Amino acid sequence: MLSVIQNPPRIALPIAGSGDLFPVRRVYCVGRNYAAHAREMGADPDREPPFFFMKPADALQIVGPEPAPHTYPPQTRNYHFEVELVAALAGGGSDIPVADALDHVYGYAIGLDMTRRDLQDEAKKLSRPWDLGKAADHSGPIGALFPASAIGHPARGAITLAVNGEIRQTGDLADMIWSVAEQVAYLSRYFTLQPGDLIFTGTPSGVGPVQRGERMVAAIAGLGEITLDVV
Image (cartoon, rainbow, N blue to C red; front, side, top):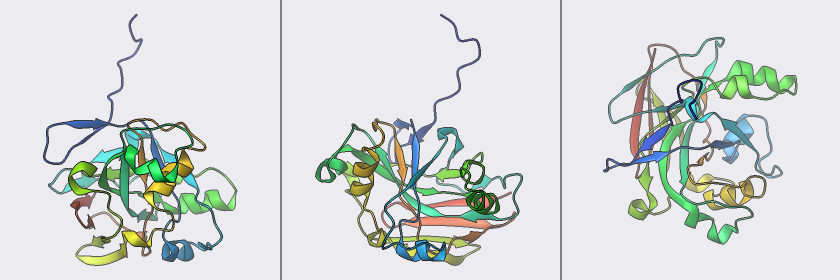
């Protein structure tokens, strides 16, 4: 049986220090998972359970060690950066206990949840889905994947984003409201998680707009950094 169109390419992340690849299935994103960021977005982090949205896998932009161009998307005048730790799953299942959740994590990467904030804000006011704000083409820049077998499971360490050399976001992985293990366990109550799934684990405070001609550098302790030039 032949496909009636050419098969779309499968998105795959490079593995740091290796020629191997990690094929991506789904991309889950947790919202408002750092207390200070939750407050800057007008929410109460002490009362809100975790919530998730999704990006298409083909919205990922694979970023290598060199600076990469990042296209400013259409239909927005308020395009925001959000630096995040990304967890990649090599195992899955349903109703995964928190104590077992990290056994399913293959590794970690630096990611950005780029957001058309004006479109997201409009969707919030109208009680509509966030897709137009969150799922733009190339809205998920992501660096190489570092296996947990090599670096462990990062639970603390600096997470930052700079624009033109000025630090805009700074936090610590220890400031997450819901840990990576808790996010995996919670998600598995609603979805059957599978190998190849990614979880963008939330962003610290300081999110803000970026313009064409500016350079973003996202960094996480132990994972290095990725650099994007907005065009």
